[in-house]
Amino acid sequence: MTLALLLVLAVTGCTPAVEQQHSSDPSLATLRQVDDLPLYEMTLIGDYDPFADVQAATPASPFGCSLFLAAGDRERPVFARNFDWDPNPALLLHADPPDGYASISLVDISYLGITNPMARPKELLKAPLLPFDGMNEKGLAIGLAADTAGRAPAVAGRPTVGSVRIIRLMLDHAATVDEALLWFDKYNLDFSGGPALHYLISDAAGRSAVVEFIDGQLRIEKSAGPWQAMTNFQLVPADAATRAADRRYAITSGELSKVNGALGWQGAMRVLQAVAQPHTRWSVTYELRTGDVHLITGQKWDRIHTFKLAGVSPAN
Image 1 (cartoon, helix red, strand yellow):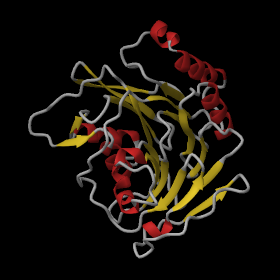
Image 2: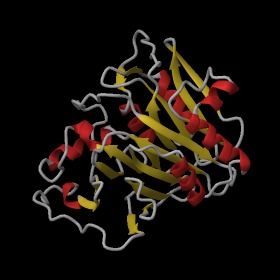
Image 3: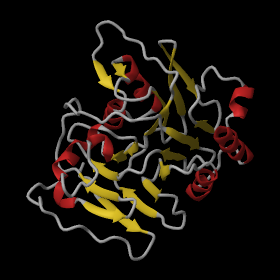
């Protein structure tokens, strides 16, 4: 399908589109600066090789992130996340590969070695390979967070893929949580370029799962109710006391429990604000049945960017 996307900025006086020096490339011709984080936006025109080589920069310290699914309102399930990290530029990327699902995702472009995309715009053509969170047209959403104790298995005979690259494969080819989980049985994950990770995956039917790697074993905890949350400790083996001891998890789970997971995107954003850290770079909500995305950068809570992934056809 053709990806038709509408950007509506819920603020006035935003940064205008940047004049392009590489407009001969149709993807780069869409590049524009959205705000002063800085946040950029680009629509990828055409295909890409999901297995292309990318020399991603190695981070100096682990991610810190908060993620949750709020699916108490079955008609408007919301996937929400804070990305807590260094003050790097971000890219909101639209992609519609000919052999996969259309998606919208966020990328910390410093991992592509980019500080100023206007100076090195062609490097942004590799951005599809490093989504830090995102949603596809079937209502599947995925986000990552650091799990410093994680250790992925190395299964003989399986190819290896990067720990962020696996998100691209799932966005392109999985419509449900169960379909997404199958990808972890196809590949060994390479954590050598940064901290070990764990993942929260959710879909338009309100299902979700935490995926972790504990003592070299894949472990999965599926949601038992209308919400699920994850921060930066290993959730699968954690008892109630361990979960309550993590401040961000305790606040998030407490707020979700109060409403039985029935949060609209505004309520989800309030929870993200409550657990934000000084280094929260972006806060985003993905509405899994409508394709609506609301994004706040740099903790400017009164400046909301709204995006639309058109043509959403949720899987049930």
